[in-house]
Amino acid sequence: VAPVFVLLEYVTLRKMWEIIGWPDGQGDGIFSPGGAISNMYAMLVARFKKFPEVKEKGVSSIPSLAAFTSEHSHFSIKKGAAALGIGTDSVICIKADERGKMMPSDLEKRIVEAKQKGLVPFFVSATAGTTVYGAFDPLITIADICKRHNVWMHVDGAWGGSLLMSRKHRGKLNGVERANSV
Image (cartoon, rainbow, N blue to C red; front, top):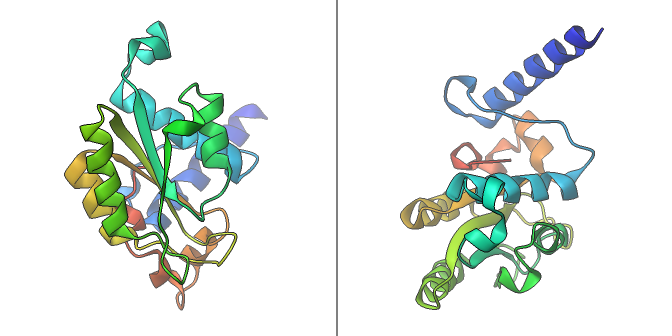
């Protein structure tokens, strides 16, 4: 029965790539038991994409990294940084506005500051539905910043990602198709 499950997984993932809006349904993916491990996997892939040598040589072979996330993001971002040997001090929390949305101006400022300190910005985790306020970060603006600075953009959609299935509320995730991982 294993080939049947592999085919079912592929068909399901392909449909998800289409729903996200990735060109021609292209993408890759895995099933995971929850949002926390999904966020860590995204960080792992982002690090590997930027520094593929880490697979053979380990974290001592790469420069000090900086990851960015909202001050209202899920605890799993720092937990993932700890588990991957990046360190929780390397996760820079970005200010949120009064509605709980990440402030893009602070994100850009903090990326520039990290570069000036000799850190390599490699990962931004935007949130589609924070656990505190239910806020949706401004994905389009965050995607522009990530593109400008060549940083991997992840969207944590554990809470609000299902709105991609809603005709009425899908717009809350405008820009998700520009993310490197969801």
